[in-house]
Length: 407
Length: 215
Image (cartoon, rainbow over all chains, first blue to last red; front, side):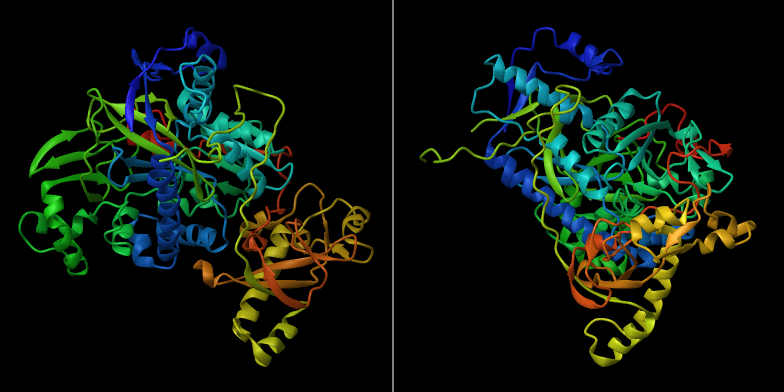
């Protein structure tokens, strides 16, 4: 793994505008940044990212199977009791997942470490699947990248294939998101385009415009009944909204399925560590409630005492506090040797229960810290998108960096 | 190290959306799903008999629970038609009846049970299939079965059909995925909306500065 300076494609900004990629610059800062790119070897991609991410997803499914049958875990993960049947039932029925993005810390040497799994509402899909692909093809055609180079990016094909697997031919799928947010909309549009390619009917509706019909079904902004709903809106919020009482009775099918509420929850990280202690791709993780006293010299909760003792030195060197519900780095604080060294200003999630996770220091390339986004479609890892930041906590204004495989 | 004899498999898409529209050349092979034990029965009694006889993975109680679940799911997800003729075209002569849900009074809880838009004919329930998801961390699941036009048996989803409604074998777990609901109006049909704005509030209340729902 290395970072390589490369010439930018002449006129890429015009092309971005033409394609509707309107957020290539955000807040006066570049978001899409192709002045350099990350290079991986095929072995790094296949052995250190692709295979471990696919394995992590399989481990996550085991964790979901456990939580779905365990009221104590459902409680701990903040799933409202009135929706336990919806969440656990969707798992028991085998409702299929569509996609997710694992954020991994990786520097080309040791095993990649799972920072968190946005298994419910990941964005940056267009940049990863489409614009990054275009960059690669054009740079290769221009001779900037070698003919033998490649890119880990079969995301689009995998999504099309997944749609054909999980939906009936011609099924009408509604896509709900916030139309005012171009990042969210681009992700939804990318999925909807793939759905059309898979032979499905794709229809957009603003999330806030979803209505409830006289017969208790959900309807789109044009008052058409919704049969299948893809929502770029977190389950933890969906379960707490006014319409939550109609989720089961409305007879709609949801994508992601309700069981993703279990997975897209930082509380899954302590559970994974409990189920797979010492796994090379996991960081030690605990609920803060269980170890807060122990971290000040007291005792941990008895159930995690042994695991905490094993991880204590690692955590003392460095750890991260995160709320169980959080997006885009909100509410994250990093500690090293007992001292707070970084924190995000956005604390809008910080009233939720917190977890403690061992610190996997991000590597530094030219003063930037990259985080790998490993895309999962269905049950397999099928592509990569990187974001990097000068700050140590990646957030929503981090830069997106293209990558390529060479060697 | 010597160069590999064959080129490594390509790691990127042949085409993507928004960059190259048009010819869709999709050749990703679907992974072969693992298979689960399944057994189908024309009625509850034959299931109970089989459970008493030599069941490997289900009990008499499983029969009762799953038959009830299959009956309920039949009401919720079996296809509905405007006329008996249309129904018989899909499911064969003599294999259709009227919609039991359409005869319930539209009051309170039962309101959502009404089928909408005059789609009030359904195929008959002619059995159910039970499958063991124990190897996948689940329990025992069931699907109702209806007839197909060519005399076979299928689940409401209709993507797989079986020669018989009595027999055991291995099927893909996806066989037990629930079909979309056919209660209420069909997807995309026009409806009367009584209320909007029931989704999105939790995110807005969280933070005034935040606009993205994703991350």
